[in-house]
Structure formats: C-alpha cells, structure tokens
Amino acid sequence: MLVIKRKTNESILIGDNNVLLREPIEIIISEISGDKVKIAINAPNDVKIIRKELKETLEFNQNAVTNINKDRMNELKASLKKIEK
View 1 (cartoon, one colour):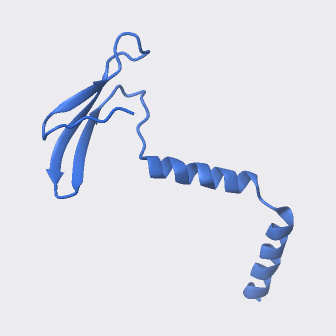
View 2: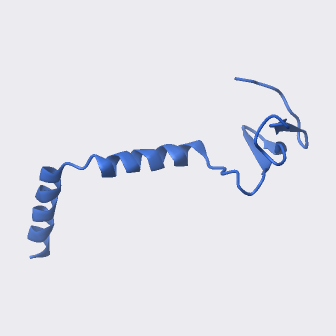
C-alpha cells in the first residue's frame, strides 16, 4: 500500500502507458475540512468507480440471494400468508 500526503488541489495519477487505460486516473484532493477529505476523480468513462462499502453490500446481497434456504423461505411465505388473513 502506498501512503502519501497531499494538500488541497494537489493530485496523484494512477496508471501509465503500461496499463490498459487510454489515460491515467487522476485523484485530486478537492477539500479538507476537519476529519473529512473531499476527493475528485478524473478517469476514463469505462473505468467503474464505486465506494468500497457499496461493493461490499452488493456482494453480501448477491451471496444472500444465491444461498437462500428453501425451507426458511417456505416458513416466511407461510408467516406472511397468516399476517394477510
């Protein structure tokens, strides 16, 4: 892991001609306020950018869907039918 210090309006570049990107990804420190840092990201349109916690939530939900216990689902259906009556 690379750790570097940057000030407001300073940036870092990710990628070069050896990487399969049309242009490097630029991370810009847009604002620093208290314990929060606002960053701006310039990247090619085909580069997907997502917050880590959203990716983890998506993976968790996908795993939950693929590992559904059919018996438990039937119990839940039965419970919902009772509530509807």
